[in-house]
Image 1 (cartoon, rainbow, N blue to C red):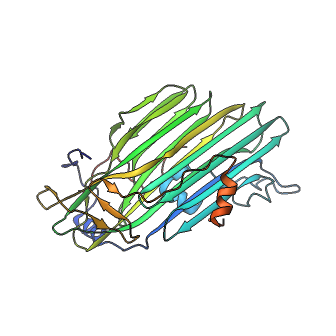
Image 2 (spheres, rainbow, N blue to C red):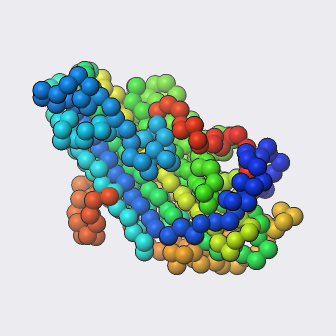
Image 3 (cartoon, one colour):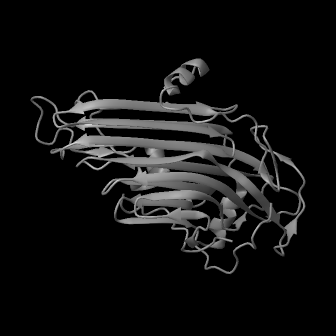
Amino acid sequence: MSTPPPTFGRMALCSLAVLATWAAGSAQAASTAAHALTISGVAGHPGGGIFDCATSGPSAQTLKYFGSASVGVPTEGYSYCGLKGGVQDTTSSTGPSVAHQDVTNAFSNGTHTHTSDAVADFGVLKTSSRGSYGGNAIGGSAYHAGEAAAYSFETLPTPTNAVFVSFGIAVHGTATASTNSQVITILDYQVNSGPIYSMFSANLRGGGSASVRAIGSDLPGFATSLSSIAGSGMAYSFLEQVNGAPTFDLTLAMLTSAFPTHSGGTADIDFSNTARLASLTFYDASRNAIDFGTIVGASGRLYDADGVHLAGVPAVPEPATGAMLLGGLGLAGLLGRRRNSRRRPSDSNPG
């Protein structure tokens, strides 16, 4: 697969000393993780104080990678606050992780249904979240949302003479949202312990705005309207330093979240047709591409210039079969500004 020229000459984000620290690597344990969440209801506790169930936040991992695009849960938990839905988090050190959650909840003035699914394998991420609320406007501290996240934590060998690396992720997805409903997808990456960059995002607010972005620009291949997004394309990383150690860590993380409007509507986002590592290029000190053949990650997965070699990654289940699939696999339960410590992809390139 062809690779675009690497991005050079951008302002450095940090000192050379810090860059050297990133390049040293940390040899993270190879693993995958999947996360699915649904939440529904009006938060409150009988006899509780005025501030009960008033504070919410995402899990530590979704906050780290996706900031305020994550769905918050009251700190007191679902049961105490009278909410329905739940969270499933799964991990694997050998292959795919799968997570599923769904909820149907009747409010006093309408019904909320929601399904979230995630599948993660090494170099392959699949997520979807879809919800609807039918009825009149909800009052109070109402929750009617869902999210799915998939993570790939891999360690790759650094080929001889390789100083830099860049890679591309093939993405394919669709989204629809009724007026005032919102759906979001974010695809992030991290090399070693360096900054977390958003290399792809799709954001649709029904009747208001729609965007599909890669690093520094709109991403070709997607059609957008004020009610839908659909298409496919390739999102590329910055040029990253990997010299100075025999291996480097590569983390990929993808989130989809859906927020049907409280006044009645639908929100559906489906990136289960795969975000896949589909291009991998190493460069020497003069920034010439080098032929590295095939390398083997700590997971045992093979990688070459066309990215990861697929190995039977399961599909995201349909809502009606998700629970049965999870049972059969024996898997047990794991919109504003981003965190200040994160770097926006348009800022610069550490290479």
